[in-house]
Length: 116
Image 1 (tube, rainbow, N blue to C red):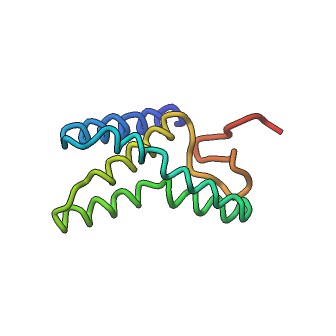
Image 2 (cartoon, rainbow, N blue to C red):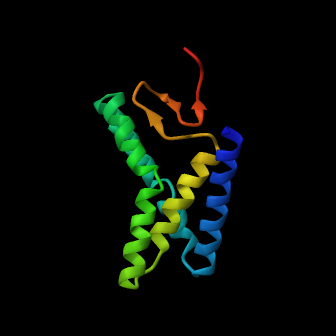
């Protein structure tokens, strides 16, 4: 199952980056904003429970999909949505899944990091 979910993440990354390229958007902007969702790591300063919630909000496809609906409804660019989705797909392809409140390393894709 983990391999399947990581492959899914890789495909999301590829599709989002391809759509971004077809939109003629700035690759400098892509690079500048690609890791913005990782600011959510700061939630772990308040503990693992809050950290997991904040991280998961920033790393769930729900956010980019809501942005996409708003962009399509208002006729604005999908640029932000595509960068955000590409980031999530990239993370999932590398094995960084949604977090459980027990520890940063406990994810829906399995344990990451060294065992303690």
